[in-house]
Length: 294
Image (cartoon, rainbow, N blue to C red; front, side, top):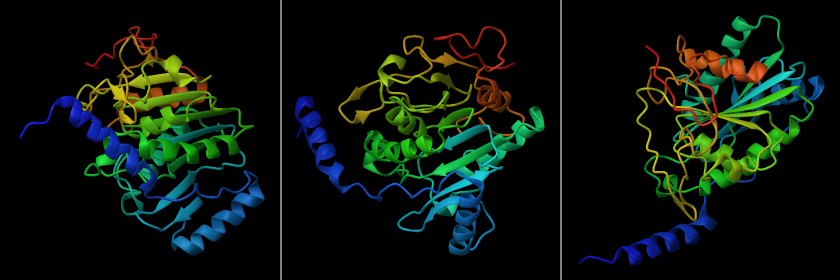
């Protein structure tokens, strides 16, 4: 039996709205003051809880688990980068690849140290939300992103006073960043392999930050370009009509942006440090189409 498309759409919306109150996860993780003494105390406490030797701002084993790790000296840093991961990450795969929260933080910090030795930079691998699984129906909505945005806003607010703060948002993480963007006190929002930011244009994000977007030559991320209520992600950020500053995402696939040797990594670090991507061939103009590297 075939249902009219209008009936199916109505049913999908009803299911989405009714499920909004049943989202997994809890309140945002509690953050310490961003002072050397408060951070040292927090790191000591989370090491005892996690059993590892990490600088964790927060740690929670409930459900799939959440954690926020710092690479570098956050108290002394003038520049702070926050990496927001996409779907499927949990404590079990917090490390591993350059697309994982800890792996990305280490890749960005290592490259920043190489490109600007002596610059006090800290990078935060932020798994402060319950990232949806690809098999979860909510992954086609902005609902998990909206919950994550609440927690991300708290972190960005706690970082006020730093000279430069940038968000680097990968895949579904860019939906989280889009939901958090209005009025957020950050300098740059960089989206990599984004399916959309939950908006039709950069102006709809209502952010004072510079918005950057990149798409790798072999990245086949789904970019439906539509949003109806909480369903869908909005416009593709690398399209001219969106209005972001588009830079070359390099020759790789969806999880390769921060891989060692990808020129996209250098551009992300340059944006974080200076507010410019240092691109060539005109690929950093607002609304420009990304160009694959030869």
